[in-house]
Length: 348
Ligand SMILES: *Cc1c(COP(=O)(O)O)cnc(C)c1O
Image (cartoon, rainbow, N blue to C red; front, side, top):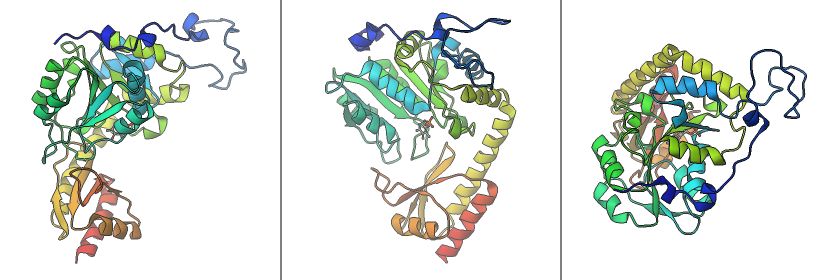
């Protein structure tokens, strides 16, 4: 494999001179300084100043938790913004393609459509694993990136690490691995592989295990070269002050997060067992995430019945390989109890 990031980046992005904000040109310093450089309102209210455009404090905290250098991080307004930046930096509209493996997270396809990038779909196997032979057959000179999600949404399983590594080894485009659910998984993050694979981009989010979907914070981890390219095109102040503060305090209280993760995994295991006893449940798929994919006799019927009982789940039955499947998030112990009691009532 001959990987050269400068060959992958779109030429006008490589040549781009990024916007330079007031806060880029002068770093706030300790002590009494009169700031008259950013046309802010000077009256203090906690958020009257622009946030740090490079989110340095927050990056330090994430870097420490994930075990990499702060300059290997790019933060976004949710991982969806980070994914969009990857498309815009590397994929040439109406020319390049990406490969995705359905059933998977729907945003890769939507972002490809928004950015006019061709989408090549290579379905997962019956047990929702990567079919690497098929993927290799689909790679062409115009394939810029392969997007995979592990643990995968909506199936819940993790892909075999050896399969992901074989794609990383042999493909000289980008391999984007979405680890939104990694903290629920028995498999370790690929972050330790970053030094060995210059084509690896890992995305993560604070929306799931950290319980912060409302603040919108996602990030990607990659080589410093890739991060520098993405940094050039991100909106200058894309992470607001309140989000930065809240994210820092949550990341510093890892014990509290870990306690919730442990409880959610225990609840997932309990649900897994109990769902199997419901008469109309045909299969419960093994999950490494905080949700379960469940095959039932008639997904539309059961979905509607649950709604009538004030329980909202996701009907995934239109997705490839997910016929008659519902996706259930793991709730609080009390919510899960209500779910199980309702399903028992519906099945008798
Ligand atoms: C929920 C989810 C995300 C999170 O996206 P955010 O924009 O960070 O909230 C990313 N990828 C997958 C596969 C998800 O299921």
